Image 1 (cartoon, protein in one colour):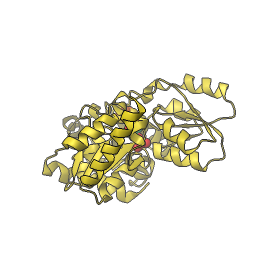
Image 2 (cartoon, protein in one colour):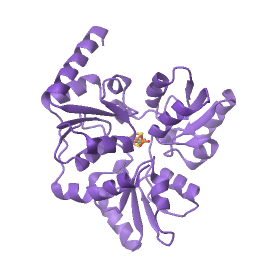
Image 3 (cartoon, protein in one colour):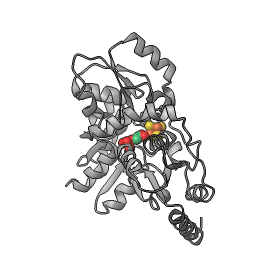
Length: 307
Ligand code: 13P
Ligand code: SF4
């Protein structure tokens, strides 16, 4: 894309954003060109809070489908647009409401904690949601005598379970992108950069997390990078975050654990799609009011619990 064409597109996006009274929200993993024109870039929890509190009429959500659905659930009166409907989260699709109902029936009295990376329908069946930023805090607040069903990410669940020394019933879902990051890769990078600090996302497997100095949500990684004295940081998560880490901290070196840790779904939304979305008001997230009402309760509980 020529610089001239890109500039023209950005100008049109800016005009339409004003005309439609729209806010553009983007996840930390989306393409740099989209992050750069967004009104706000953040992790799942930060984006949920923004979506809930925005005064705009239209939300253009640049992230995967469950994130746009969460925005709609929290702001049902607003028009929520998802520029590329095919951009979904494979982990979210690993849990379904029917199987969850059966699992709950086997564990009456258990508290069901659901990672926001889940469909709206699944959220209607759970007690409370969490993100990677607050999963441990939310599980820790559940009375010790209660069983906990955690879904859909078995790795986030296992990492929380280890951190809190609390057994949980784990759904067998996982993030295919974070599963590409292996303990061997971390060891290789540590060998290559012995003075580097290692941060990883808790969607990584527990053996990867055990080799890291810290595990953090994407928003937590950005905060850590800003505040730390460390100048070299090995980063174990999806590649897209390097764009913002490097832009915000030009004096620091960020070393991705793997060039292959790319979430293809997070890369589907291009600048052109954002423009089309605003021009044609597409593609609107539609959820039935009953689903919205039931799914909102566990998400609001999560937001109230804080990070
Ligand atoms: P964060 O909430 O940390 O941004 O993670 C969302 C996600 O999908 C990670 O794969
Ligand atoms: Fe889903 Fe993993 Fe992509 Fe995040 S990185 S959106 S969890 S597939």
